[in-house]
Image (cartoon, rainbow, N blue to C red; front, top):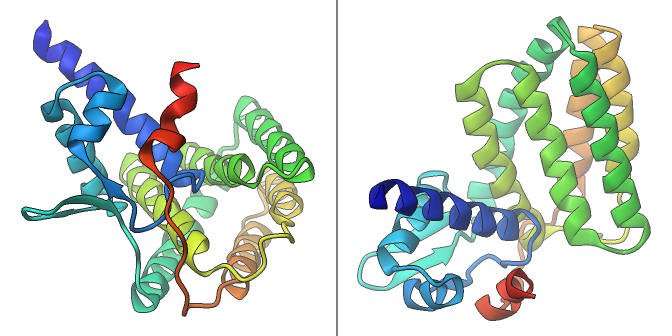
Length: 229
């Protein structure tokens, strides 16, 4: 029972850190002290280490021997590789999602787009980015292929880090319009159009990147403080 409880704690903490990275509340390069996180969440360092190891497996955290863990900070070259891999995966995902679209999931996609639009409209960029990422992950769920979903989960998180580091225009977000067009293409089972729209969408993401700068870091307590309020 104790082992199951630790696993559950690790899953919850993994989720909190994953979300903080996806929402860009944890900046690339942020130090993830096991001692500090253990104190923040009220768990042992063993539980924290398990969560960080899982995130390291997904390439969004780097565990450095004898120096602890940090949020990954992809280089420009690594960013290009990640974005290329995402193009390959997203093309396959959208082709599979188009084959048997489920109305309930299409409705969930539309709800995510509404939330995304609302967040950007009120200036909550972090939450908007979170819902944008969730949109792509739900499409991957519709593809009914767990390995693809797992791989894309890692790539979407890494993309969030890349955007945090390299995006040159944080004010202009039209992703929700492009997401709506993608939903329409999937609902219509129009594979050719869906693939074209996805490629164009990923083009726009890349066009806003300048792969040559770095960004500031946030403190762990500030990022997770709302969990206890």
